Image (cartoon, rainbow, N blue to C red; front, side, top):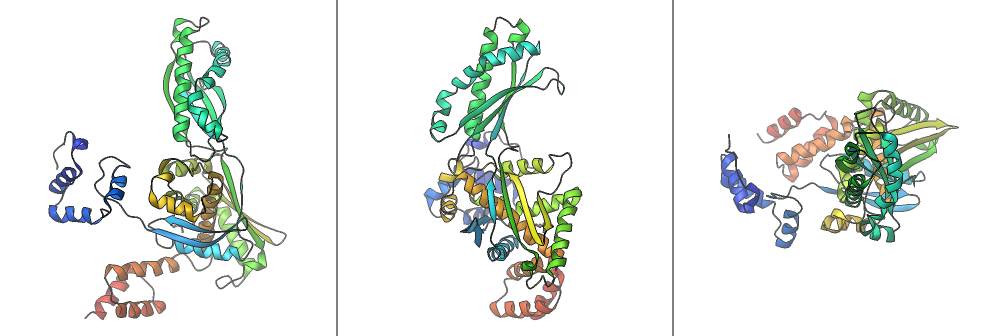
Amino acid sequence: MPNQIAGFSKLSKQEKINWIAKEYFSNPSEAISLLKRYWNADEKLQQLHDEFIENTITNFYLPLGIAPNFLINGKQYTIPMAIEESSVVAAASKSAKFWASRGGFKTTVLSTEKIGQVHFIFSGDSSKLDKFFLEIKDKCISATESITKNMQKRGGGILDIELRNKTHLIENYYQLHATFETVDSMGANFINSCLEQFAKTLKEEALLNDAFSEAEKNIQIVMSILSNYVPNCIVRAEVSCRVEELIEKNIPNAQDFAKKFVRAVQIAEVEPFRAVTHNKGIMNGIDAVVLATGNDFRAVEAGIHAYAARNGQYSSLSHAKIENDVFYFWMEIPLALGTVGGLTSLHPLVKFCLEMLEKPNAKELMQIVAVAGLAQNFAALRSLTTTGIQEGHMKMHLNNIINQFEATAEERILITNHFKENVVSHAAVVEFIENLRK
Ligand code: MEV
């Protein structure tokens, strides 16, 4: 077991690496050289990455893939995806192409409101608190002027603040529940700064309020923080076509396919075990684009899953139906994204991705991300309800095994040809390679 270390963060990068290598690795010099192989030769670029977080020792690569041919509201997009899972980019590209020849994806931003809360304890008469809040509400807002000035110039700012009585949940627990418009920024810093100012005003004004008793004057601020649950920041993505237009190679009977597809979605609507995996497939597309565009995928994940459970049971994010011989497939999800601020202007690859998307604003990015999720879901359900998911996965898996064994070009051809006819499993591929090399 390694010794506890004091003052680790004060060590230089090299000292940190030396400590880890010595404490955890049987071959320290090999461990150090692996870390250094991932350093960027461009020292300035490396320093930029070193400074994103604390205690950086190297870079952790993820592939950046590209899914072309997305037609969204009549405009062509090539979508960047940062993801490690094989098949995801291929599936997105396949869906994009499929729907591009059937009218493309349609999207609408339904709302863009963000939320933040000051959680506090008030021990006293709630009707006095109601009156007090109405008296100080304007002051709460005007005290944030220096924070909101720039946001207001961009068309955003504080939308409203409500006092919410939560004493039925926890004794003496209240909230300032505030709503915001943050335009093209995700808004976390802006919202948190406003909230901390609201809390300060609330506390200070309570101390000066003569109508309060001593206990009532002493409001206890528990915390001030944005909510990653944004049920009023919603984007809708949809596709539709006549049922007979669904026909293609793996879909010989469009009627049967459409019905089975709708059934598969219904199952995810009513069965949480299936819903989680169904939505995971949607998140394959969403996270990959969120990450590539420098947004906070943990926030997006948390918010979307909360939304999927908003009716009391975790359920499918997407929906499908057949009406008058038309197949409809759609999804509405909450997405708080930014195209300015944060990593968007710092990370060179994020800048690259945003430029490739033709510098979308936050609303456009919401639409692109939602489409990536719906496309992924369509691809997964199409495979699941026709050939099964393993066919495509195993092709990618085969490639990974071939790479793992560092197959020569000749070996690669022999292996791929053999497994066109034979079932791919890790053991079968390994055995085939070993026999080839005997
Ligand atoms: C795998 O990453 C995602 C799927 O399991 C999604 C689904 O089952 O719908 C294929």
